[in-house]
Amino acid sequence: MSNPRTIAADGTVRELHYAETPRFIQIETNLACNAKCPFCPYAHMDRGPMLMEDWVWQKIVDDTRDLGVTYRPFLINEPLSEKRLPRIVDYIKRDTTAHVEINTNGGLLTEKRARALLDAGIDVVRFSIDGFSRETYEPARPGVDYDKVVEYTNQFIALRDAGGYGCHIEVRMIDMQENKHEQAAFLEYWRARADAAILVPLYQWPWSGQTAPALKPCLKILDEIFFYTDGTAPLCCWDDSGRGLVGDVTRQSVLEIWNGAEMQAMRQLLNRGRRDLITLCSRCDAYKDIRFVGFEEEPASAPQSGAAPDPAR
Image (tube, rainbow, N blue to C red; front, side, top):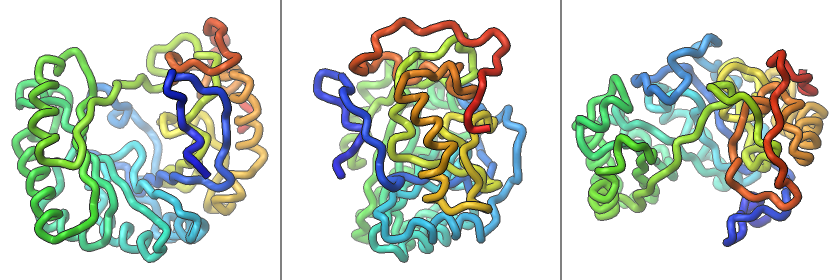
């Protein structure tokens, strides 16, 4: 199956195709982070447990072996804060069809940890470096040392190259007003070292100031599924508080959740652009600038109560 999230060259989405099985699975194996980024809800989250039990993440992987899944063992956390990460990567990679990716701020990637991840077979590492100087970077990533991040990123590239590992390395910067004056230098420096260096947009988390949804479908749920540390499955990776739960892998298989009544109800509403009828989505404007054929309406006002009926509950 071709990538169901492909957007036409003119920026238009004409058809929505849901994958028969999830192509991407994000697993929040712990709830820890070494940064307090102002644009991330991590510092304000109030849920647990702090660690996903081993049998839970193993079950998620075992439920989906031989399906060609790309696993991302993180969600709203810093993956390198997870001491079990090399073991998790190794367990996933026993499936020859599986891939493993992480996005990281890089501040915890010591040489020992870097070698362990490369030896375990990690496929993609994306470094988030939102500045090209300490003065610009550290206000965006409080708690993380800019110079150490640059050192660790270059070290990881060197270890990858010296060992002949097949890991793809990308360095990305969130496009913000505060770093626009450094973007050209950032891209020039990292494109000469990593496999890719890109700018990515800063998105707004649902329920973080929006007063109405974009009445459009959602591309995020076409081929992805997500899991919290307790094994519950939120509809979207941008759900930091469990407003849109669609299943529980401690009681169901991954594919039972993927094909279940809760997920189907969500899809039917989102196919019609009715985010206003889903609690989580009723304060989400993601993809508002994407043109979906048949969805040119202006956003409607969200329910006054702030508690839209939610078919997943």
